[in-house]
Length: 212
Image (cartoon, rainbow, N blue to C red; front, side):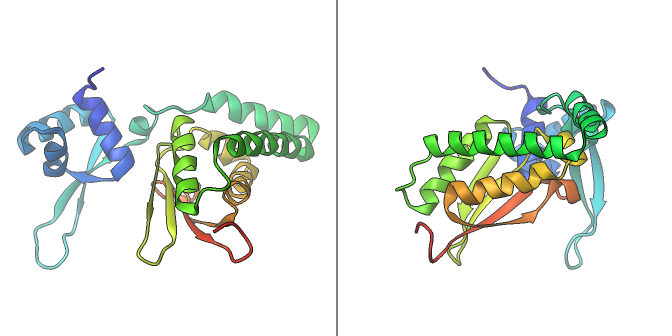
């Protein structure tokens, strides 16, 4: 099904970050003016907003378009409000230990499922690619690539469990541990949505006593 210009712009801003109207127009195959008109309509609906930033050197200031909170809410949230409320109630009524037990059970189940889908005998780039495919299917809008130094980058442009993670940091810690166990590699989080970043980003390296 062909996506509407609004949905395509939302996805581009979500996956690639703030953009110039000209860049969005080029990606959509329309003129800069047409893109700007569409962005203006979306701004009136509260989905995007323009932010003027100084250009490098002596260039004119640039107007970059960002997603607003309402724009971000157009993406799956995993029943955010209900999940956050349930976790808060569980911690209040049963103690943090009950929440930790739920997170641990989820980690065990997730790790089992990932290991069933990812070929442990494959090289590390292939395993990262498989993990990115799984995470995209789960709503994280994941991407991956290899850096010049040989390390691998996994990014997640959306977090469908962000509300749950915001009231219980254990979810983020558990996911990092799951990545390490699944990939048999060193995994470090370099960008974190909960700390104000646009996305979560992980740097992945083979370890000498792990799988190469």
